[in-house]
Image (cartoon, rainbow, N blue to C red; front, side, top):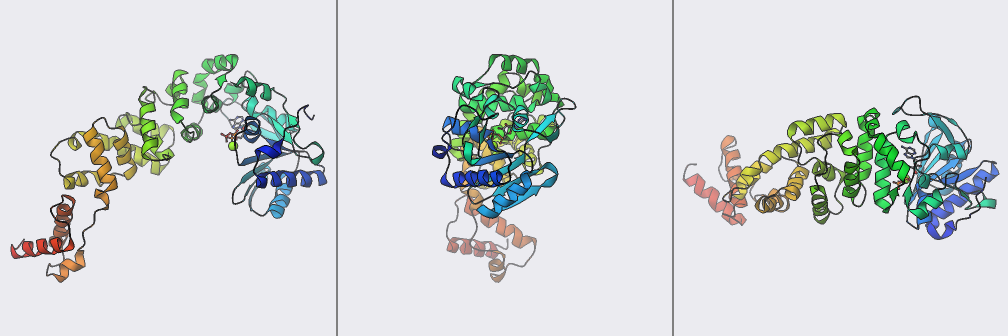
Length: 415
Ligand code: ATP
Ligand code: MG
């Protein structure tokens, strides 16, 4: 089964990763088990790109081997016995260890049924040829390439190719994965892969909201997510995810601005920017369809509401305290999204001022201090604190002495 080619793994991995896979190779050899490095890290080794996520596949019992490995290397292990998988985390690495599996799909979009299999079976269930390669780790064949689908050749030709014609039907999330890898590496979809993708875009309807959202999140973690989103839009995939999710060409500019403003932008910020032009109803529909978790969905809806207030924020004589009063009920991520995506320069400036300055403004005097100065507790005290804060926001007072003086004036006026 060993390929003709042996890869010089030593050059591409950190010393720590290398030590770990060598150890894994020895432990597996002692137990007479086949063990392989698989998937993305193999692709990245061949591309000369760094990758610290190690995926190991063991033919047969992976969990026992993972436990032995964690013991030798140090690191926390989490075992999923039912799936025959384990995850080991060390300070700098995440290592997934799984039993080699064969799988079949009961119906499109369903999660596959799996059973123990060979490394070839395990590679055959994968998404693209460039992700379906393995490297042997047994000491006698360390680094031998296992490449049953021509992944190495496709890497050289810079192509993303599915393994069989039903691939997108079995699992339509692969369509979003395909554009993500294509755009990350500057590859092309291989011609018949692209044809099959175009023919099967509606298969995305078979995928649960959670799984689609997960793929979108992966896209948003890319260095330039807008590239994959643009391509997904051109191929008709975004329309299937949600009809409002067209890439109208503005995303590139907005995402670039987001990267200049927040480096790197959080997936939450990208998510909100992606839905920035949606109406409130479209936002509600979108978060329901994609089962967007509470924290992010609140920010998406908040942003849609804040967008409706933008005309008031655009008025030239709005005071800082009035702007503050308007903005304080919205989440900072919503304000940031609008600061990035709003059309008006004045609004952008105000929102940035709010985020960087106004929202941090505090008075020197607090309730206690006012009480000591003779202000009775109750609404009067609350009102005075608010007025003091506004005076400070608007620059009418600066120092603690200014504040004291103002409160004394108010008291003498019987306010
Ligand atoms: P990345 O650099 O984005 O992490 P990766 O190749 O490591 O790329 P993962 O999402 O970590 O991608 O998945 C690990 C491997 O699992 C992939 O290389 C691929 O072989 C396989 N895989 C993941 N998702 C699918 C899928 N939907 N269908 C088939 N194979 C998949
Ligand atoms: Mg990975």
